[in-house]
Amino acid sequence: MNRSDATHSLAVTLFSEILTADQLVRNRLSRVLPKGMEISHFSVLNHLCRSGERSPAQLAKSFHVTRGAMTNTLNKLEWAGYVHIRPDWDDARRKMVAISPAGRRARDAALNAITPMVTELVGELGEEKVRASLPILRELRLKLEDEG
Image (cartoon, rainbow, N blue to C red; front, side, top):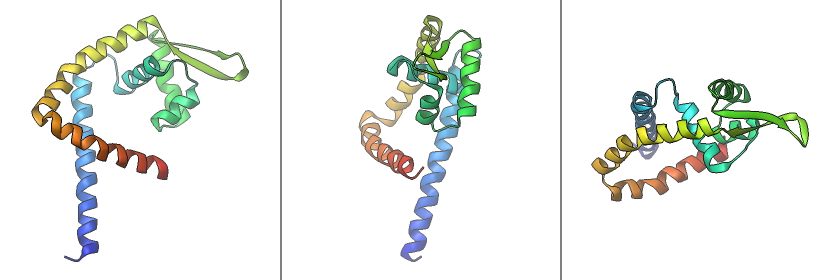
């Protein structure tokens, strides 16, 4: 096998592992999240807890999804009472999204539900391995964001 074939094989193996791990983690998370909560809902609530109020466009950019997909998620969160959506006072064409007290409680419940599963996984892998993998995964993510 020449160098080009070996690099191609390595790349295919890397992305196969990432995609398979992503699917398996999503399946596990979906099973432990509170009834009716989707991973996208938890992700947005968690983001709003950390970052504060954001526009739907800012959220779509942060999550690398279309504005339509984010609007769909936000409509479900608003219907559940987890977010408040208001007009942007500086630009009436835009809206702003903030987490509600109920949304904060739902996010906390979800975090409490997934923490044991994630902690167990890190324990099984070993903290040292996980810590060593983070810079590589972060660099890969940043590289993909730059090219996105």
